[in-house]
Image 1 (spheres, rainbow, N blue to C red):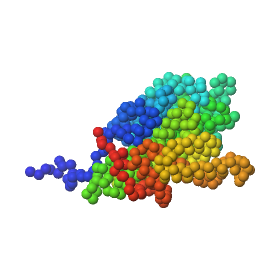
Image 2: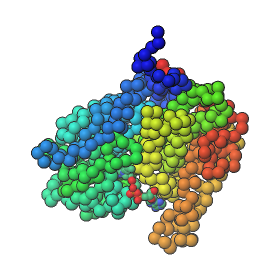
Image 3: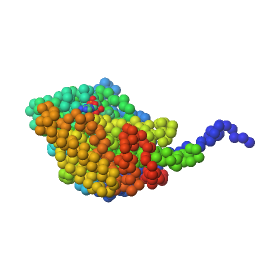
Length: 583
Ligand SMILES: Cc1cc2nc3c(=O)[nH]c(=O)nc-3n(C[C@H](O)[C@H](O)[C@H](O)COP(=O)(O)OP(=O)(O)OC[C@H]3O[C@@H](n4cnc5c(N)ncnc54)[C@H](O)[C@@H]3O)c2cc1C
């Protein structure tokens, strides 16, 4: 007897050669990450990292990530009776993701943890959990980054730091002092410009007779992410110049501060997160740092978020190459697994090298941040030069990497269900915020110009790999020459040579600015190569050096497009590090 057509799953065909979903794996099963975290002093956190890794790779978490992005936040400007409330409503899955991050201390917790390596442990966990969903990382990063800036106002830090570092997720707009845990945001960017924050028009007027230094803030901010946060650092023009203020969303008595949310941005990616246009209409705020020194104060917050940009981009690359390698190992074309075809091997190995270099550098920078936070001046100097370079280069590589990883899944990679379109849409953001590509590259010049110790720290770091690989030695010498040229140029201009009469005589000049992206790329690549040569398996280090430093640059730069590796690369060995066995 024949089966009636309705009872058959597909009347016309069997589903063949489709890849089972990549779920139920440990995201922390990542050799480059684990080795780097151990080197930088966070191996004591391994078991927690794996616990979070298994949660990040769980099917249920992937579903929360999908829901949080497919149901983006909604602005509720008024209540049913017409009162202004300025609240943002999120899908419950957002709260699950953010709550997990906070309970695992991915926000400000390391600032209250005296253990050496606490910032590294947090960085590794942030990298792992970001692979579950990137959007909710925004309030997590901002809360992490607010502490060093807030410490410029010791009384405010005394009041709020314990709540910012608490591993308690307590959403909702209530007076901060009565909550179990707090989140923080930052509002700098205005309509007329975000890079040039000194052009801000938002005003701060002292409240007459207020002993605590309260000011009334009036003006607008064009981008203000995570607007349901409890506290914001805000830049405003005070009588003594551009200054930094702490602005709570709810005032101590329970009334809402005068911060109005005008709209939410309709964004390319980062859709689970809310980014608002905000207006302050005489909102109360308290000074953080000296009057007129708003930029140097808030830059401490910006710098810490830049580390998270590098970590976030490295995490996206790892997510992309793992998905691509997994898919290629489970799908066949022309009678073989995709991964077994030589050209696919070249593409995947190239993606894996890029990812491993990004991870290794990101965790090295987290180690520098950890030691800098404990008073290590040399590590602080290294961070000052390596962080803007890496923020520029690694974040710029992420969208190219995501596009190539996506294509490894063929047409399926272009379809939402694969998760790859979200990875791709999210990928350019880390390069835009906290100083867009050009601005970060220019900040690198500023670091080299103002802090001779920064270049010295970089040279010392590279010297640790000297003699291990002649191609790396040659690249390090070339970089040394670029840095020396820059120093000469700066000295010439300061001593009144070409351009010396200009009011910006301390700036190294238009030629150096023009080349700033090249320098950022050069520093990052040499640093990545030096770290891999010292710490990665020979197959990885040698292939990275051969493809990125050891041959004349391919058109468009090293490794662009991916899949143009030189001959003789041990593809299988490299790919083993990106291949996962789902558990
Ligand atoms: C999703 C999202 C969330 C955000 N959240 C926040 C937030 O919470 N708080 C906040 O304060 N801001 C936030 N921003 C704003 C972000 O920080 C700014 O967009 C960014 O700093 C750039 O400023 P801008 O958009 O005004 O661009 P502009 O300053 O107009 O710059 C435009 C371009 O010019 C380049 N450029 C600028 N100056 C120079 C120069 N001298 N030489 C060469 N090139 C130059 C820049 O690199 C950029 O590519 C967010 C942005 C996005 C997209």
